[in-house]
Amino acid sequence: MNISVADPFDAVGVPPGSVATYRVRGWTNRGDASAPDWAVDEWDISGADSVEDVLAWGRGLGLDTFEIFVQWEDHAQTATGEMVGRRRHTRIHGTPGEEGGVTETVVFIKED
Image (cartoon, rainbow, N blue to C red):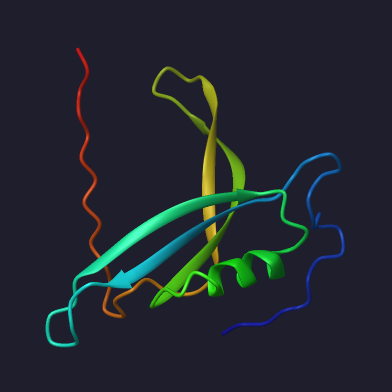
């Protein structure tokens, strides 16, 4: 862990009028210690008074473990040079279900 004094000119906080949004990922082990089988559920939370409220909500779920991410807006350039907004998430609490890493399968279906 590296610690340094923060630049006093860096902006910190949520801009006036905006609302912090969090994503909670809850992990449940449906298997056992010899053959873990992790299931994950996700929720988006906005309007919380503080991250402490989100932590309390997550703890109340009764899951094996959970993660909390704060959402922030970023920009990316497309192949055509257009700037587009992108939603990003940064983990601020917790770890995935399996310490050695987790593989999540996402299925994409092309609509005609």
